[in-house]
Amino acid sequence: MKIESLKILKKLDFTKQLVFAYLTCERLYVNYEYFSENFNFGNPAVLRNGIDCLYENLFEKNASNSEIGRLIDQAERNAPEINNTIAYSAAGACLALYHSLCFLMDKHLLHIAYISTVATDLVDKFIAELENPDLDNAFDVNTDFDLRKKRNEHRLMVKEIARQSAIIGYLNKNNNLSYEDVKMLLSMQRRVRKKR
Figure 1 (cartoon, rainbow, N blue to C red):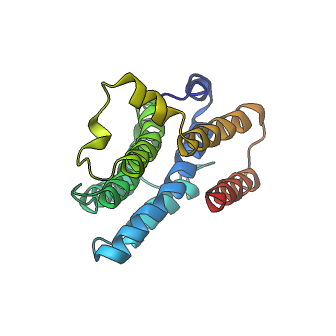
Figure 2: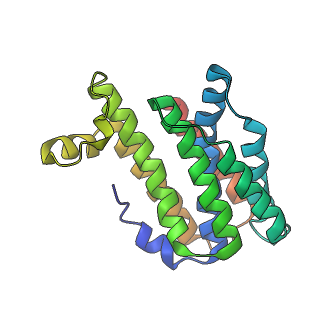
């Protein structure tokens, strides 16, 4: 599902776009952490290092392209094969980090749109699993208009879209963004997650 305010995000400066990417990676990291702990796969510290690199580079470039490239490679190598919903969520966290680090290095806007899409796709997959756990490829059923509409209107999808839109709105209105703003946004999205 596309987020209407992505049009605004694409017009913001690089720093604000990187903040959006960082916040998304932080939000999805728990998926990977859960998968790793419960399925004995991968290394959450690898993703944590990549997310920390994003944070450290929000307002000034501290990492070299070779360091960022190493983190990109590690994010790719720690992505699980997708064989269930939890693995799908963990792989999504890796994908979001991969595209965020690529964006840090090359500044291509396609990465930003993809990061947003990864987050909504993960919610969509979770909704599909809730609605019909017996259908193996429920997240691939996109041709049924009523099913698509029902999933787009599901409370979890509505929350994800509202969360992304609120972050983009805040970034758009704030001309003097600082680490304090980032911490506040991070705290806000943690509170929203706990209310689920």
